[in-house]
Length: 415
Image (tube, rainbow, N blue to C red; front, side):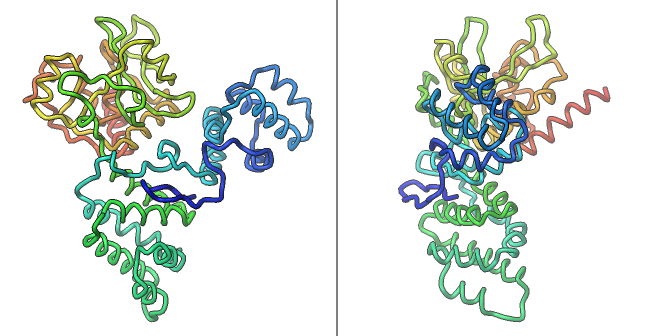
């Protein structure tokens, strides 16, 4: 799997995530599927009548081939992205992950990583990000040391001398060589003319090794490079924006009425543009239901707005005057927000268990952005006063946010 940097040329012979699946690969990749009929039910365009016709094939190969042919015929936008989404919806998560590893996503909006470009603000603390992951990175490289070295040299990311030293020096362990390689990468990063591009290329090569520990660490590094830039995308008077300006992980809202604003997290996947929280009924304040919907249904012909984070005091005051939304609290990187929202969508019973107040959708969206439960406007009037921003430090990753949320729920049970 190769991922594109802005301006680079992709040389990936494999299927792409937005390609229409061929019959042969469709049958091959989905061979381990336990319940073909349930999977078919979640494919867009397939109806019960189609499923009844397909299941007359007793041999699984012909059943899957018939499903492919029918789907391609009735749904012109069929792609691997819909296949993966359908698998996740019927809880075939392992198979979905397996197929994710076999397809590439050059758009940056799919299942792997968001590649930093000129449109994404890059963390200014690159050295600290790499240093934080350096020990685990050295350990993961050890099992693939020579392959990694060859790959980095082939892409011009390390010198011939570094490659030769790693591969020919005797008397030291592979772990120590890996540690030296990571140190060399840090040195190259320090003197690079374009540090964000250099470290991103390193991460892409590590992901391409198809080694889960390497992939996980490299993906985390790239995720931490991409910071929330919502504050740069709102005007001084209006926070209205077009669909084309949205980025996966954005907190958006629509004014449904004078007294109700609908909040959600933009995901940007087919059939799952937005994830949001709604109450089961108008009387209940303690039950939140996590749902997904399309962007058009979410906005319901109303004005679509972006909620900004990491705002200045002046921006906060301006938002009060112009009825826009912004928070002085720091947001997690966009990919982390997206992961957190998807986690609650896949585990809907985990969200809830306390008083959501009048706007459960805002509480949910704010938490997905910051990992903080009490920054929504409804909780405290003083929250709208810049001097009383939360003293609690927001988490940096969705896992840290999830841990914080579970801790809050445990405390509620105790009390």
